[in-house]
Length: 82
Image 1: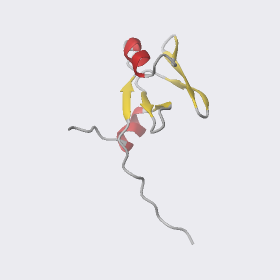
Image 2: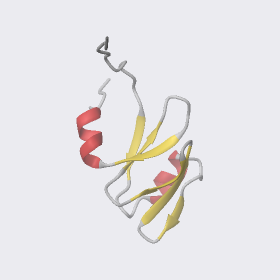
Image 3: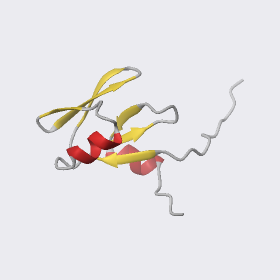
């Protein structure tokens, strides 16, 4: 028998790659992201992943980084205002 589960609410930090904010992304990721023309190469727990312009770079709950497409990001996250 299967069960239904709800994703726990977790606040994450993220930055969107716009092609011109490499210094901000470098500061956010502590320099682990490599720039290859307009594509960022991000070392993740699953291996190296690419982020294109418009993608978000998410800092996970254990301090890891990974890319996320804008449409998935919009469906999954909403901005926190405190």
